Length: 487
Image 1 (tube, rainbow, N blue to C red):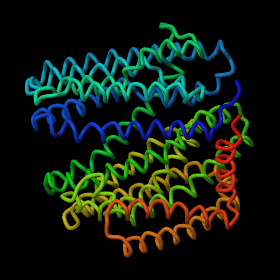
Image 2: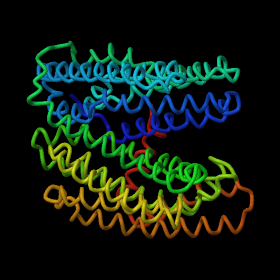
Image 3: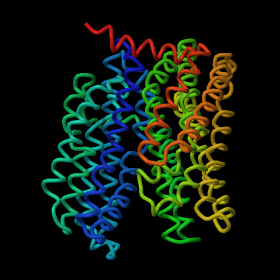
Image 4: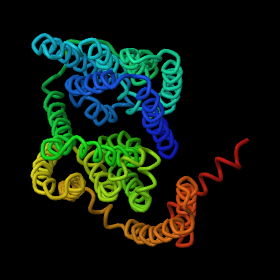
């Protein structure tokens, strides 16, 4: 199979990430005005409640499937057998998730008001399993899933404005949300036959698959606890207002983080394939490209967000959330640490079958984060929660890096990576100067923000080009070919 362009895949996955982020940004301002407060409350609670059962149904299977399946993608017989086993295990975990869901609805009578909405959201469980998106990741086919994502997002937005008209339409909104998220997965299942032939089988080979799947699942649970503990502890120790302020900062931070991680996600199957084939030299080349590329992207993203934190909050949220600007300025540093931590875990430790170390590191970090929250929140409130996140992300980055040091050492001690970091720092000084000058020169929010972003990008790229940065020069060459050399 001819390898897909990592640059093109990164662009497509980035576009898909933007769509996934834009959908709630477009729809929420509308529904918050149309639906009642109670309706929004039922919708949000039901969505959160189902997320736990989605976690159970998923069982860490997607991550494991990409790692192991990438090794077999050039062997049709083995990939068919592997995919059938993984899909059958996924169906079994989905059935278990539904049994637990129904049992919980019967046992907990205080959920009666949410049953209808929860059942609508539960459709996601079935269609997520049916969609087998891990197959497309294994074969690095991001074109199809991006195109269908665009189509279903557009259909969903149209349906929202046509069908959601009154305060009691929150169930229709829930159904449209499900359609936007997983509506196309039935097409995914049939289209996947272009790559593999999947069938249900009772020969699951659990002795081989179950242990690593459960370890990855345990890591997912630890990550969920780690991510949710901040908000939970802040709500217990402070107030709903503090949670609202911090949640706004986290939402903006997550947008930047997800955009950068899109570059990373598309390389995981390629790295898993190369490692599984024991093509270590090629693996090191691709890993080096990933680290080099992200080393010149994450620092300016963090610095730019810090410099423009007030403007970003005012545009995405509103003036009443301006208090979250300081939290955003603090938590933005976590972008750097979280991205490199993810490189070490998803691109190195998981392909190398060291998921037990990922689990250990995640559990330790989750405990550390909880302790830090109890220390910082009483005196610093939501800013303390942001600081706890930064320290925790730094810790897990160091631990993951140490856990795969024997693998990444020849890649890290590459003079290009040091050179990229040095050039990125110089470029970020230019970003700080541009943002400061724009703040002094213009008072209008939109014009100041737009000019700051455009001029900062121009300044940063100019510095990299002047310093003969290979990534910047190759990116410009790629753009030039795409724009001017099309026949």
